[in-house]
Image 1 (cartoon, rainbow, N blue to C red):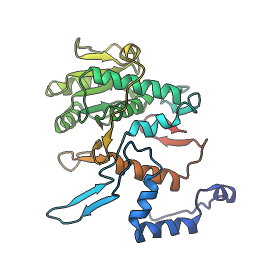
Image 2 (image 1 turned 120 degrees about the horizontal axis):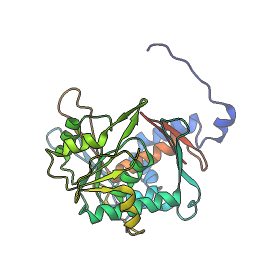
Image 3 (image 1 turned 90 degrees about the horizontal axis):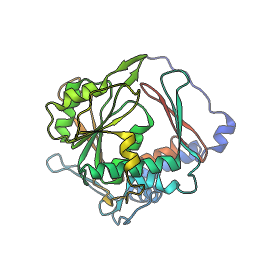
Length: 311
C-alpha cells in the first residue's frame, strides 16, 4: 500500500481542462478566504425555483450545533439532473449500461430517462408516497436504479438505496430505521456470475416490516418469483399505465434528499442524511472542477455488477 506511481496528465488533455493547477490552487484559496462568495458562485450553476438569500448558517457548538446551507432556497433535484437537458438532448445517450453477462448492454437516452422518471414518479404517487416519505430501493446495478432515485426526488420523497447483496435481515433493519413506505426491488440480481434471489430476500424482510404497503418489482431476469396481489406491482406494467408527466415538487434546500446507511459491520447501521441543496451544489462543483466534465464526455463508473456511464 506504500507503493505509488505517478501518471502525468497528457498535454492535450491538460490544455482542454476547465482549470489548470494554478487556477485550481487559486480557486481553493478563495473557498477558504471567501467561502460565502465562493459557494454562492458554485450554487448559481443550479436551477433554483426560489433563489436563496443566505449561503450558510453554521454554528459548531457541540451542545447546539447548526449547519444549514442555502436554507431559504427551493429547488427540485430531478429538474436539475434531467429536465435541464431536455428537449435539446432528448435523442442523445444519458446512460450506457454494460451488464455482467457477455454482450448484455443498454443505452438510455435523455428523452427515455425523463419519460421513465416522470412515469415512475406518478406510480409512486399513486401508491400513496408523499413529500417526505421514504422509499427503499433494493435493486442491482441497472438503469432502473437511477430512474428510481430520480423519481423519488421528483415527488419530494426521500430515497434509501440498500446494497442488493445484503440479506433479508439487513434490508429489514434499514427499512425499519427509515420507516419506508414503498420498496422498489427486482426479481433477481446477477452478481459475480451467480444469481441472487433478491425478491425472496425482500419478501422475507417485509414479514417484519408493516410500514411498507407496496412493492414495485423490476423484471431483471424474467424469473418466476413470488408475487403478492394488492401489494406487488410489476415495474414495466405500472410505468406503461402511468401518466407521462409528473409535476416536480418544490423542496427546500435543507430538505432531505436521501439516506445512505453504513454497512453495519461495527454495530447497528447508521443512516447518513444528505440534504438537497448542499449535496447538489457540492456534487456539481466536483463534477466540473474535479472530474473536469465537458459536453460530450462519457464518465465511466464501475460497480459491483455492471458499468454505468453518464454523458
